[in-house]
Length: 344
Image (cartoon, rainbow, N blue to C red; front, side, top):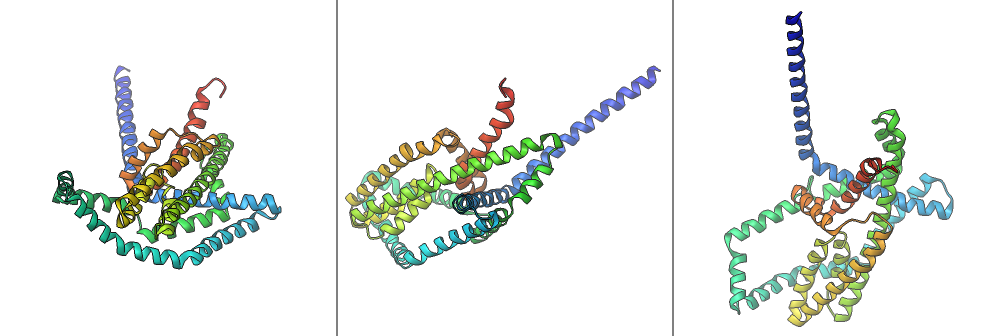
């Protein structure tokens, strides 16, 4: 009897060891797969964001016209594509001219900047630091990693657009598929959670587009008043890059300052002041209004998410870090905080 109990105990111990090994192996495999496919998952998430945008436009049409959901979705997609193509067709020639001018003037501007820097001791030290072989390798490695994408730039955009279109046309198919993966007792909660995520992401997209439009208009007016020849393309760049919090305005400022230096250092300073003023207005007024209607994200959390996702996946991680943070906050609030609190 004692021998049988001993054998049972040993068997139970071995079974527990193998279960632990299996859990560790599965967890490790899952993490390795996630690491290898994280870039693809980001593209899928970008496609979902695009689908949410299309469905938001469709919802507006439904409330106005009272037509069928699929008809409104088709019209919304068609109108968005038509407006985008129409905008670039109307201002495309001017943008193309200004982009070619910018590509011609930037090398001259950089050379002028180098010349100004070498006229002072501090400038010489800066130039030595920048032009050193070690710094060049670091900058090249960072740039290569940052702009490396999963399928190449156009391939990524192609994937995002088609994922967005397919989900926008038939969201119920994909939502039902996700809900079916959950045990029956949790399906209603999962569906409510997906609806909440959709509503919050729709609010975030609406606010972000409004913010981008305001940045574009203010930048265009300011640069036109200052008499900057490439005002339209620089304003468009500022509006698009304002989608990326914290880093976007800095990226937009660099070419604008270089163009300003081509005229005079004073012009570059005026441009810098203009961009700082616009960023102040956007951060303290527009973003504040937006955050009152959506999840409030602490600025330090956004920067941390940008740094981590940017290091992991490059440009896509930096671009999508904020909406991903919104999703994570909503999931934590609904799946953990509400259930932990007595009211939940």
